[in-house]
Amino acid sequence: MVLFGGILSIKAISFLVFCVFVIAGLGYLLGRITIKGVSLGTAGVFIVALLFGAFLYLPLQNQLMVGGKTYVSNALKIVENLGLILFVTSVGFIAGPSFFGDLKKNFKSYILLGVIIIFMGGLSCAACIIFDNKIYGRDLEEVSAMLVGLLSGSLTSTPAFSAAKATVCDSAKFTADQLESIVAVGHGIAYLFGVVGVVLFVQLVPKFTKADMDTERAKLSESAPEAPSKLDGSEMDLDPFGFCAFSLVAVLGVLFGSFKFGNFSLTTTGGCLILSLIFGHFQKIGKISIMPQEATLKVFRELGLMLFLIGAGVAGGASFVKYFEWVYFIYGIIMTLLPMIIGFFFARYVLKLNLLNNLGSICGGMTSTPALGTLISTAGTEKVAGAYASTYPIALVAVVIVSQVLIIFFR
Image 1: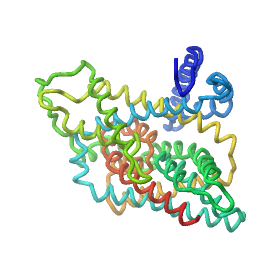
Image 2: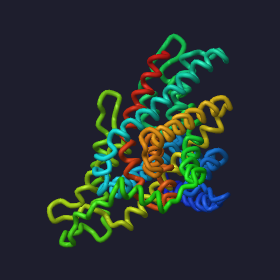
Image 3: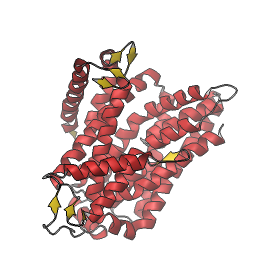
Image 4: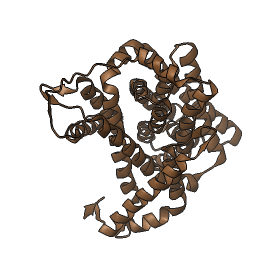
């Protein structure tokens, strides 16, 4: 079996699959533990994956080795990307029917909120860079690379991470490769709280505000009413479950997301999200249905989220233990909490968004895929995905620009 540029045995592949299912099983058990009405849910999988990466990364590394080279990072990236494609494409299809109506009604609010969240993240990052340079006397170029990595991790933003690495360049003290490694370390340190912090936030806010979820769901339905189905039952299904249509959109989304405009690209996440929103909106081409079954989308959404958290969590756990420093971890917490809290109060008191639209937009503005999965469970409705999908592209572009500006400014 040829894979990752080398030949991996069936035994090695089986071991990887075994690890994935062990992490998933234990993660869901952990996620079921509820303390005062708060639980990790699917994010429990992420915690177990982190622990696995921290303590058992070496056995996995040894199993996925060919000719003295290990392919564990490649294998985990495949698991992560497969999960991301399944999750994001499902969310797009689910949100598609009502997406454009919701976007038209709240367009300015979503743009403004996405920009404010990322701007506050960038501002807090700049403040931490200056503080660290003044207090600890570390080299400004090194600190800026580390903290922009922390920013991408605190916002769980792979595009920002990639953009920061692409922007660093050789200097008198550091090579571009050294600075890229520093960016990667910062990303790994902040990623843990970047996931867990937003997941807990979307669960705790409804409890602290004593929100009545039935009332909030009704408000959400008023601002994002259910769009009538464009299917009349006479359309031809390509297959009983909609796998064919789903696969087609996933392929087109990956291709669309791979196009680069300078250093910027929509990435797999953005490409699959936009294409699935469009297909979900139109639902059919002529007499052919391009809308997967609702049950298929729900299963793919959960399966995708699980695989994404495992792939990202195992790799993140290994980096977290290897490079952890308390001061950097605290910086990451600040960069997660400050933009999220300010964004929430701005949306609530200035934009007057209802609670579920607010939290959905926060998930999109923080580019947090895991938090959306948790919010759907907490809210008891798939409609919150619309606010996420509307804010996410704005935040995606803004965080890439902010990351590059910070690297250039503090160079």
